[in-house]
Image 1 (tube, rainbow, N blue to C red):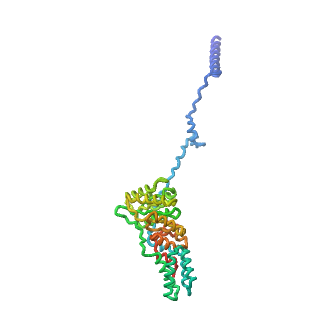
Image 2: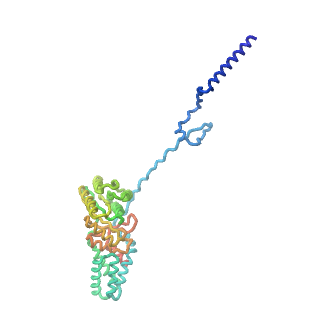
Image 3: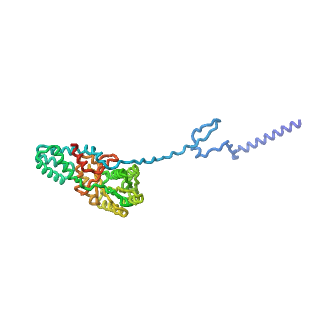
Length: 392
């Protein structure tokens, strides 16, 4: 009995001790029980955000962590370097485009000249046709006077003879004896330098790119200088042309010094031992003085390194007499050696070839006959006149 009472006393004491512990634990101001650690460490907040919303489970049912996908890296494809066709024979291949735009002018003249009776009224029509085609007043008067003299000598004329007369006169005015060679031969270790000038909007930068393409097609190595720093689009456009044919393009900061870019392009051409450096210049015409200073500086800076072999003036054939006025301003500013006439296939006023040569005293060396990359061709007077007059 005594032993039983002892056990009961022990149980009561243990119960009282346990109850006292719980009272201390949960009374106000008491210490909070430490949190129970889960079997695995919880992720930090930032890690939790990166974890996918629903992780897959493995075969045992345990959740597995899927690493986030690696960020995509944009890889720019290398530009495909094209092999352009050579410049020789281009104008012959493009003759049909020229004929489509010029045939009404040439055939109209032939129809007038083939009439049985050529009175003053007909000669006035011939003169008007030539002036309308932008041949210019002085060249038109010279042609009409010469034609009247020869018609009197011939008397009656067949259509073939009329065509021959007109062809002779047009060729004489265009002057096939002018040197239309593009001077792009190296000077020993130094490259030839071509300066391209003209008003923005005439196709100046495009012509620069097409010229580079044409020279690469002729087997020459080319460096391009984007010295039109006042138009960001000009440098980007030139870069695209250069990338297509593997030509290095030297650029400067937007609004930077054009002469500095021209100098660096020339230096790059010399270092790389290229054949030709082509420098595209700005085409602003705010004031003649500003233009003169800028182009003069570009030319002087280039000549510290090399010789400027060509200064090509780019003109838009569709602008007619407006283009002539622009040409005269540039001719006063810089010593032009040749003309590149763009969009000749887009106008029936092919007579501008005659008037611009007469006004500036320099030959048309290149013509643009379409929008394609290989539509810039060396100018051939005979092919041009035959396109004007159509087939015999």
